[in-house]
Amino acid sequence: MSDFGTRDASLSVAKATLMRYSPASPIVDISHNVIQYDLQQAAYLLASAYTHFPQGTVNIVMMDVFAGNNPRMLLVEKDGYYFIAPDNGILSLTFGTEFGSPLLCFEFSKPYNFSEWINSAGKVIGTIPQKGHTKYSGCEAKSARRLMQPQLTLHGIDCNILYVDRYENVVLDITRKQFDELAQGRPFKIKIMRMDDITTISRNYNDVPEGEALCRFNNAGFLELALNHAPAATLLGLGSYNSGSIRYQTIRIFF
Image (cartoon, rainbow, N blue to C red; front, side, top):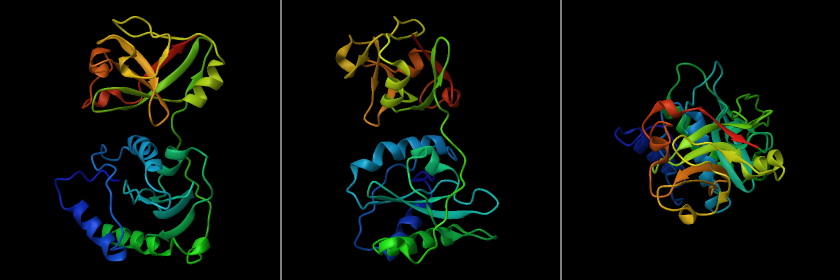
C-alpha cells in the first residue's frame, strides 16, 4: 500500500526491487490511490483488507516513510500476518493497542533515499521465516498517534467520519464492539439532513427502499451510513468522494 498513485514510476520501482528479494512471491496491490500523507485513510484500507489474504502474508506500508526526526522501519506480527511499516503512527492507527511490541528493523540517516527504504524492506522479508526474527533487535515503538475515538456524551455518541468510499458510503470510526458497549442495547437514532431518522441497523443496502438512508456494519466492522442506490456523502450534505471537506466531520448517534 502507498500513496504513490499509478502515474509515475515509483510504484514499478518499488515492485521491481521487492521482486529481487522474493521472486517467487506474488505482489498484490491493496491501494496506491490513498490521499497523499493521509495515514488515517491508509489505516482504514489496510484494516479492511489484510485479513482476506492468507496467513503469513507480508503487508508493506509505504506512507510517509521518513516521518519524524529519526525515521525507523518496524516489523509487526499480528494474527499470523506481518507488517513492515514506518514508525509514523500507521500501526497504531490501524490496530489501536491490539498488537505486540514491534521489532525495530532499520533506522535511517540523512540524506534519505527511498531506494534504501525499499531495499531494507526486501531484506526484512527474507528474515521473516526465521523464528524470532533474530537478525534484528526488538524494541517497543513509541508511536502515539491514535484514531479519533468515538466519544460518549450526555446525548449519545459523537463519531467521526473515517472514510468515504467510491459509492459515497460514509464510514464512521465506531466498530460494532464499541457501539454495543456504548449503546448497551438502548434505542438509537441518527439524524440525517433531509432524510428520516435512522433507528435500526441494516444488514444489506436493499433492506430499505431505493434512495432511503440506512446504517450498517461493513465488512471491515465499522458503522457505515449509506443510501440505497444513491451517493450518501453528497445527498446527505457531507461532501463528496473527491472533497477534502468530509474528513473528521462529526456525526452524533442519539439515545
